[in-house]
Length: 150
Image 1 (cartoon, rainbow, N blue to C red):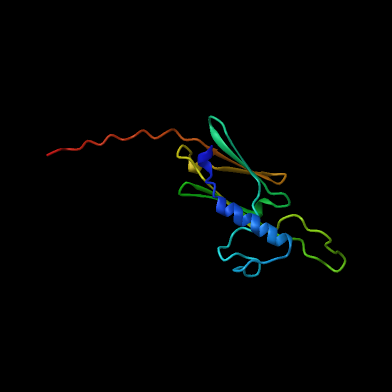
Image 2: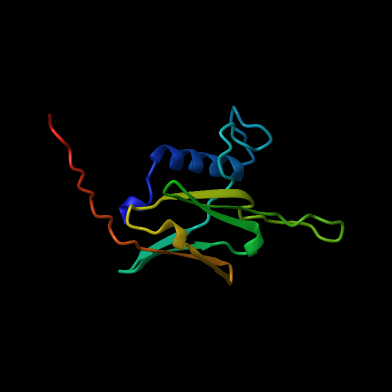
């Protein structure tokens, strides 16, 4: 399954630094209003990817969100899950004492292997878990092309 995602250690280091800075209320040079110049996600939901003989299953934890907050697309062999979890507004009769959950926009991208049918993606959203099922396709047979040699 390693061909489903590409690991980029630089992105993980940047994410770690952003979380550290947010935890202590610091902003890094190059940030505007809490957003990176490269518009990186504010957080990333945990994802499990499973494979059977017939399909791949992607499960993303999205607690506190509804299906209307999430958009799933497949384009040029890349599966994209994006959305936004909005923070509850503070009111006069309610104070926030501690906020440990991540809020804001997110985007996760996964490179699909060649043996999937991109048109077969089915989505189910239940109890804060988005489940995507992508059927496998029959491997394409190489085409023999006859070449005339003069």
